[in-house]
Image 1 (cartoon, helix red, strand yellow):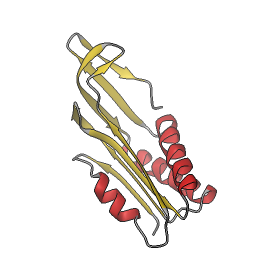
Image 2 (cartoon, one colour):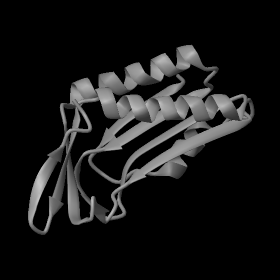
Image 3 (cartoon, helix red, strand yellow):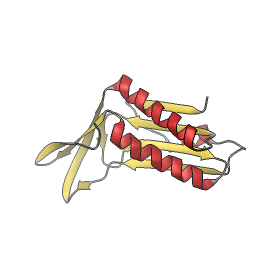
Length: 139
């Protein structure tokens, strides 16, 4: 098995993803970690709330990983995303990709995060001191 997909209600671990994709056959591991920042467009953020249509979100993340494996010589790929309430500094998403050479790892990792944000049914609500907004970053 070369694909690890997780939609989690608890914290994410970049090291767990790195350990999972590591192999003596690879020369490059690329990791993307998305975190909750303290402001959006100058507005202070209190917290984020992620919701997902979980069966479809997992299926879509798997589809992204499978497509990446078809396009690049991936040894292993992990895509983990959190749902629920996330505080400032919490990790929202971790993607790790291992390949024989670094360029493929970079390209596959960028493809995975860019496609995830466009196609996976995970919705983000940003909560501010003066209101909240659903961000249309996902379908």
